[in-house]
Length: 128
Image 1 (cartoon, rainbow, N blue to C red):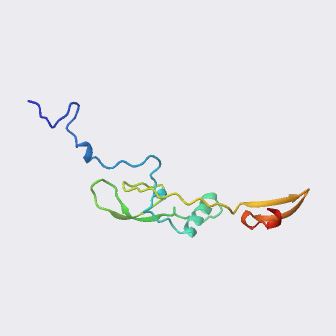
Image 2: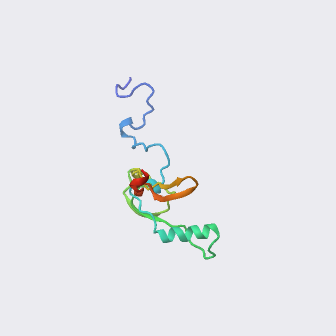
Image 3: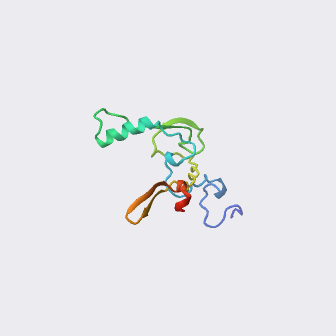
């Protein structure tokens, strides 16, 4: 009468192991994915100028490219031109950018006058 393979509370759906892989928490936009290539700087600047009203020439929203777009689980990979806020099911988080240390701007005073200004790694030895 009862099938030993069916556990109590199971509704006959796919086994838990067959479920698609869960995405990590957070926004799954193309701009955060390692597979996405952003549009050129020139396109991005032109669109930003149009959005701010600095240019009257209409500019389409810049789009990057991805050759690993998956729109449905089980479907093949596809090439697509996507905007930065698009998200597909093949999201793979981009590794965080390395933290740049140094390059802080320093101003050294003696009393009320400036003795030296520049980046922190260039501070002369007499002021260290």
